[in-house]
Length: 166
Length: 103
Image (cartoon, rainbow over all chains, first blue to last red; front, side, top):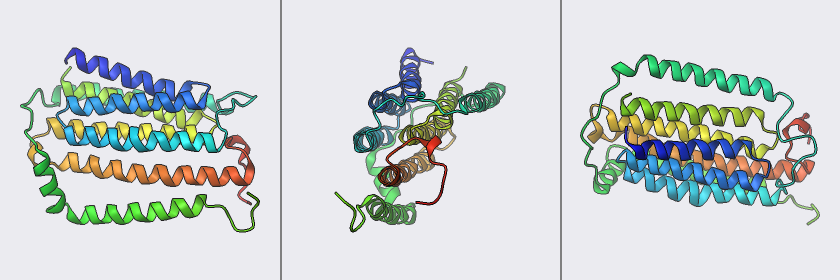
């Protein structure tokens, strides 16, 4: 376990915590970008360069910006009068803590069976491209279809209705 | 603690944080943020298992994570479109006030 791993995981967890607890919604979106960046750096630590850069491009470049757009379009940055947490916050926190307890217990119980340090896999983008257009070509096409459908669907759902003012 | 165990613990923590956010926040956009955090935690698990698995050269976990990232992006676009559409009808993104299915 290197010190870099601990710094990056601390950054990621801190960003995630800030993203779900801060009052101002815009600050939450910025903290979300920090958490995504931490995860991307963790991917780079895991020698998954392609996934790491895809994470930076898609999550920080697109999803975080999309969240900021949605916040500004809905004036969601106004803090509500009766608090930012819903009425059932205690049950939600309990469920989340219970899920973490179960997952953490399972990991710690099985930690001796997990494989130890192995040699870094030498994976080039060339190999990934060959795999995407060879063995994984059908999932790739399905994802392309899904993205097209999601694009059209998102535009249809969010489009102004006819006859609506402004 | 093996490296894989550390990554799995971090992913479990991020997943729990996302779940807590999705279950406790009022604002619909913040709930979507929580869901994104959960999806990212799953991706971290996939990449970690790929890295420390017996056959990383087969690229299975990496491909799964890349496809999962694409599906999560589509989900975020449709989800935020729905939030904007609901906001236009009800002028609110507070989930506690969205208590009827009639438009």
